[in-house]
Image (cartoon, rainbow, N blue to C red; front, side):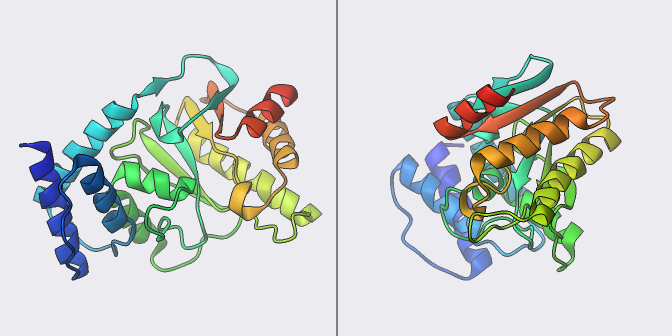
Length: 246
């Protein structure tokens, strides 16, 4: 099927599902943008198989357009860029307590980027697992990766630091995020995992302090199945911090 026509069908399904109607733009980029906007506000419900086939074709084409990055190094390593490009067994998502993804259309947080690249199946699986409860700070759960290069997504909720000065309890909560993710990786026999910078950014955990906790926690964790651990960074300052600490 023609790519523009496929995008039109995807958009029409999502609009009908949400009982909204908008003019469908003509260009590829605008239709991809509209598709993502509608995915971001989609309420979890049963999904038609025909829609999933169309959505998956488009998202897999987007994945190839961005390029898939394979990680070959064992041990602890750093990679700077879009975590949704990484071909590892699991990537870690810095979720919120609701754990259903970011609802702000086109927001550039990691939660939104991961859900947008994976497909609406990810929100549906999260909703099925959460059943309306909230995910406690430091806890984690695992889902399929769907249209991501990664096989799985491990979702965790880090502490929020409004004043930018973490307490000892919040430092421990951040360390527990990493342990919870590593526990799930080991329980599922995974050999590789990529961590984002949990709780930095909009959660305001100081970058260098968060990196120290991440590295110390991972180094002290008794690994068995896990061979490769990637610290995925997006900002140059985080790259420089991790390079200095590793």
